[in-house]
Length: 188
Image (cartoon, rainbow, N blue to C red):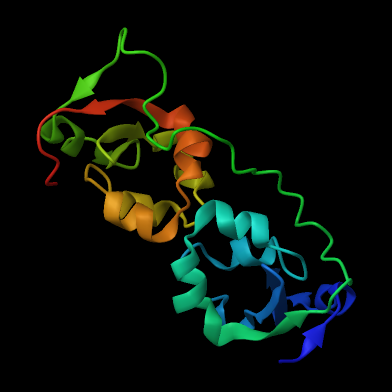
């Protein structure tokens, strides 16, 4: 497998020629820009850089193995250094992954039917692992685009979430949108 230096990767940072580094491997994602579920803007923000931190914060290893492998063109040369990421500062945070936040005092509970009513752009709730999140104010910031959240609005998105995201997001980014827990079966 060919090897590349971080400097070589940095020179491929345009929409016509976009390379990124993830976990020591180099990916030419130029052809994937238009297909990326988060939009090309997300990939362009890490173009020519080490995107390991950002990737791991948002995706499971399976995404790398199943989707990204066809774009892998080589490895980062030993000792070349990767530039330590894109500097987005998103961080993985910490937490239990449940997103339940706080003690039981004053905890709010919602039925699946109540959550289902919040399915619009100006009122968007989702369920992940039995926890309810009001993501209305997060729609425009979601790396996958607001459309992804809106198509899931008012429903349990645990399966979709777990297929694409790292558990740490529930304790970091998602925690501020947590509004309560589900009671009753989540079949929406």
